[in-house]
Length: 541
Image (cartoon, rainbow, N blue to C red; front, side, top):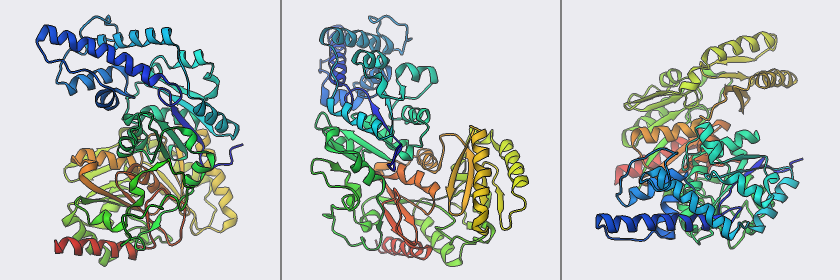
């Protein structure tokens, strides 16, 4: 039985479990150099060799084979037809070159064999013996063959590789699809899973997927590149950490925002205060920032704000959560200076009416419904669930009709069962009723918040993915701005994990608690005080 705070660990194959990353690099180099020599001779183009540091790690590593070909050729301004997956290996197409690389890879494997990293295998065995579920992913279509050749296929409860990806239509890294598919197969939430990757595209995928811990293995001494692209931590070998280290990572708490306001940038013990120090492990420097530097740097802030518990205190009934005029005024002034979006579990038109500020963007129903600043989205898969949610609402209402104080709120794309005013003795019955609905309907998932059970469509969409969609729709790039997400509840953790290492998550809570947010404010009054400081600084510039 698993006694840890995390449920699963998902490992990339090449470079993490097996030493085939260098074999892939060797095969890619042989094929690309051969093609570049052809273009030199035929087209009179200057030859510039394919290198591990500049080309393989940047454009090819971790990506599906044809994506890697396309990415590298694009970096050299070479355009050739995409072709078909059935193209022979001597055909001058993206697929043809990709197929030639696979032939070369298999030739090298046959000649030189395959080796694995003993420390990774030992670590996976420790996880399995502790009840932690394990999965393997790979962009390679040779994954199954390699695992069987090494006799280690039984170490994993799921395998999502290149062959599976084609069947399921999974997008390649840096999209998170392959990791999300593995987590789904393992029956775990990304929030409760760690991923281990050695590729830049892989750590990007882990961050985009909102995983609880993204570990980068710097086999090529590329710790900085992995950290810059979303790894929480980087190290040369997995033996440099252990299960207790990961356990403590998942139990860490945010720093108090105003306490760390004027803290020196040399402050380095943010993660160490909750995580055992290991000198050879590189912690992402985002965890050691002063809170003041988040808002007063060269990068302009972009704000994503929850409503209930963030802009207005939590109250007994949802309709009583009315934003104060002082808070509305300061959010209005904030939005006049910075891009601002409200991301709420409420229906979009409801939160838009309550906030009452024109010109800002509203994302309702946990990001299923987005409108403002010239963009709009209604998540198609959530839209399909509307009639089913209405049916579930009637079912639960009938079962729990006699419980005093219970409030069932149908929110079009989701259903909230509020028990804040319910006596404790009735809570188990409510939980049993909600659990039964989820168990009987795989198309639904359950989230538990502050005295509320929320039933949502079981799709890979949440506040974190809504934030990424909004940024892409508005043309906002992570490196160019300082993204700040402020929220108070379990649903906001999805956004905290996506923002983490490339933006800032701020939890609103009157007491310390485990969270993936970077900082903590104690109340909506402190939220307003933070906005006032930011606005005042901007006015003085």
